[in-house]
Length: 152
Image (cartoon, rainbow, N blue to C red; front, side):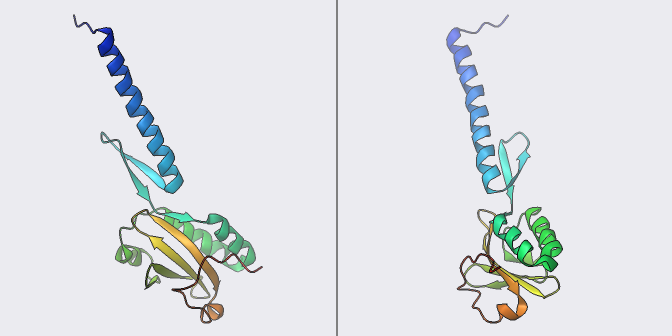
């Protein structure tokens, strides 16, 4: 028969509580920054790419109704994957172009629209910077454009 002292029971309870609390805290952090997947027996999570400023994407979808479906498809494609660097992203989305320092430009709806993003591969976040028609894209510098809310 194994007997535990009250101190041992307190330590065991504390360790269980601490590991549960840490896991819960980590889930909260990960749910804020991206999709999470539990890696069994490690307590570690993998974070998938997250589109930051989905409010802006939704506003662009309302502003350009003909791009609604293609933008939804783009968000679903990006958020369902993990990209460690640009070549992995390029393999998945062949129309993606890299512009220094951190911009990735996507052709949307067969090159009718352009989406300019800033990608942080380390944190697995894509920041939406600009979206518009291809003719309007030719008038701007993609490496310098900052976050722009839809004009309509």
